[in-house]
Figure 1: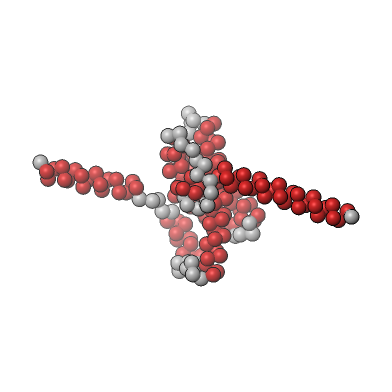
Figure 2: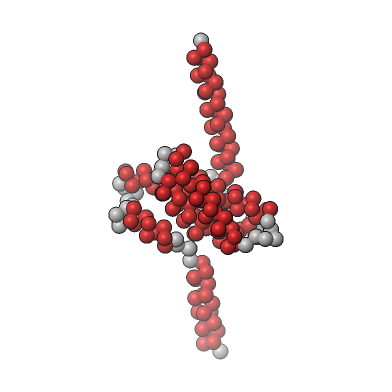
Length: 179
């Protein structure tokens, strides 16, 4: 009897392990190796660290765009919502948003597109699971994906404050020019 229970326990563990393993976007991994001449990036190398920091910054921005688009789509289309249609929508969104985001951040558009697609391929299922049980997606890019230092709401609040500051500086500069 114990042998049967032990075998069942082992079988259950073997079934659960693949479900818990993170999804790896193989297309991205191959592309990244090609881009970096078949070598892994080294955080101790200043050029590599800068590239990694830039990649993380754009990944955070793109992740939040993808999350908010998914949340809006999920709220509007509950009855016709499917993982397949969402993945298609998100990849199409990557095609439109990633190059423009890269340009605004003075980064390579191809890098941004590959990062965006990686975010979709590796994280969309978890996001959809989160939304399907009614959880908030505010901290998804920080807590689940790990590409942001803060949640969406806090990031938008800080962006608003930065925009206000930039506008006030522009007004001050214009006043100085008039004098």
